[in-house]
Length: 188
Image (tube, rainbow, N blue to C red; front, side, top):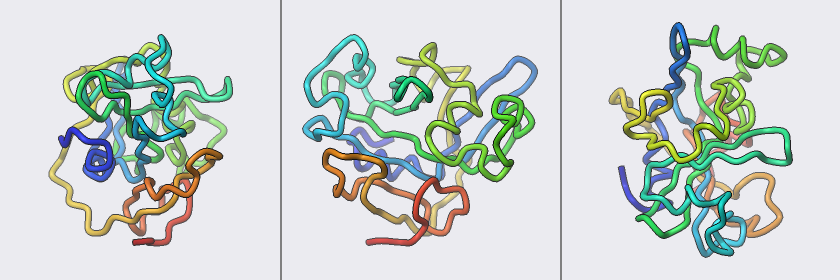
């Protein structure tokens, strides 16, 4: 995997996020990401390392999980060399396997919406602060892998729901996916 934020945000599209559960597993194809660079005022690492953001400063491929607005966990992938705080937010998945496990975790959500949006994604896969700092390329309970799937077209747009650096075109998505959390149109 590339060890720079924008390249990683694009390279993660089409990869598979897998979550082991007792009695099975669930997996989904990554269809939407957002890049957050250390010099970006919207990035949690912008003001330096804190106990909360420590995982963003790990070598690329580690989970940075935080609680957003006290309601939803967000799953990010650290994206640079150790000591540089940057990350890629996983915004949406296309469910592939284990949807019965996902539905048990988010009963109030329609099946097509199980992993549309970063909060639903983590709820469906039961990702929480216990996963913060895991190496997502080598861990056995939560990891990112490849099944050889190739993405035909990648769209780019401004990130969603930000007030700082809101116009930065650092949101990447699989063009035409039905599982995106935001606008589906292709912007180059």
